[in-house]
Length: 145
Image (cartoon, rainbow, N blue to C red):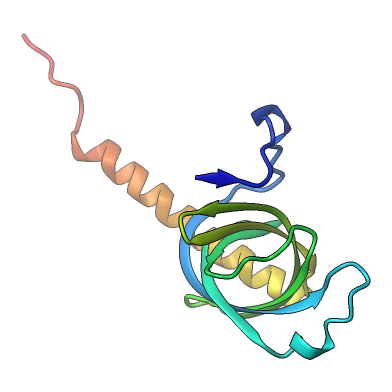
């Protein structure tokens, strides 16, 4: 595994909790430095979101993209609607023939934020139900007389 940027764990500060998921994503190049990207702005890339939070997400794709590039992202949350937003690549890691990118939301509408929050809320509720189910599955500890 080749890492392009390696931050010590103490610098990994997450403001929002991330949730593992698998959501297809389409993305389009939006901005990178002062380079004219007009010829490629309408070409879509595809990938899969692997984790999501209110601050951003991680996705994997076959395309190599530079850190600092801004993308227009388009994805559909299960039962929570479509999200269209602008993100900035903050982290990239190459794993075999694929690339993993950590992105932060740059432009996110209130509606999109609400949809992501609802999706995460439903995941939290499910996680809580599963956790309580597993705790109750085994019942009280066995006590010998």
